[in-house]
Length: 507
Image (cartoon, rainbow, N blue to C red; front, side, top):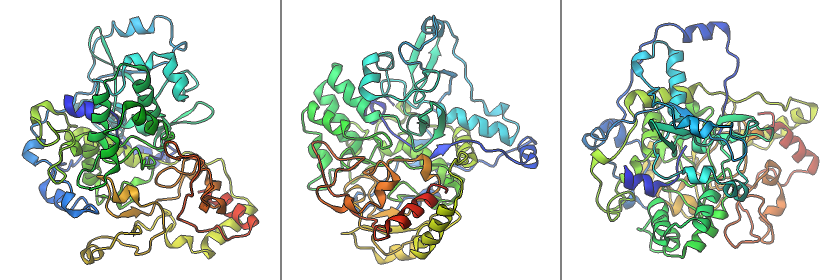
């Protein structure tokens, strides 16, 4: 989908993925013959109440029909190869890549066991849905890009957020928009955990391209409009940003820290923290605003389909982000979608992922923190064992419709965090979901917009002051601002706060 691929430019799906040791019996079960029951992804009945309405109900997305969706060609997943940073590439590697024959690696006919399907799902996780410009060979082979973005690398000098793909012999392209792009984290020791919360400095990479490559100014402006704008809002800040010079747009992109992402329908000015996918099987709502319900594996398949470009051809009160003139839905034959088997395998892979081993073992201090966690009522929202109550909290300024209380899981108390993401974007429902606290020790930045780099900052009373310097997202040109909301734990004595932090890091 050339127009959609270009306008999307970066997107989707946070948490870190790693296998843990399974009992021998469970491993054996994964190896027995397995015939999956694959649900229909674009099912009209399931889609009817899959998404929550937006905070501005008239702008709630109207998705393409099943007839349109299934006319889009299915993606072909080719073998891919690692991308090395300049100076780290093996001698002759680039020339060797150009001699490789294309190889299709996803073939459902060859998947015989449950383990086969999970492994195939990892191929889908790594596979691009764009090879036409989201990431380019020019960028990934440019030393200046790595220096500008401080791109994390593995121990072997690999940039793990994209891969080379050979769609035909002699042609080597860089993959983009795969799940791996946002949902991969490189740890300080150079080890990699697939998943999310990723830490690719993606917005800085785009800012670098705007500042150093000959990107036409209208292209940069069109990118913001297509990816971010919500034109039904009279004062939509992203529509206003899309009219600014390229340098101003680059400044806004530069202000987004790693761990937040250029998410279609979200914002540069209100950047979404990359959510954690580990444990997603136990969560009832997806995205920070809970816009997508999660009732079964079919819903996770729908989520992947939407977020890998299909939501760009939905109509938001007549605005079609990836359409011709932002109004006309493109020809489905020019589009691209995952196959049903690919989506099912991807969902099985995501469901299989578990948190990495936690180096923070329980101590007397953390056990005291566990008592404080209960005494302070944290368990009301962050209920064990998932450490979320799977509910939605309305933001200040949003009135909960009566019918929502009957249909959704509403915890009718606002925690006072910044409402802009869920009130002024295409993903805004007027709510934030209660996130899980599991795996906090390897995540960051924190809060839905990544304003706080460290867990300690969350219970630091100084962040409520107007002269506070946010340790995470500040905003372009901002030197200091208060980070308000979620004030729980701030009133505790210092020793109790240390104990609470020690406990949170063991989760």
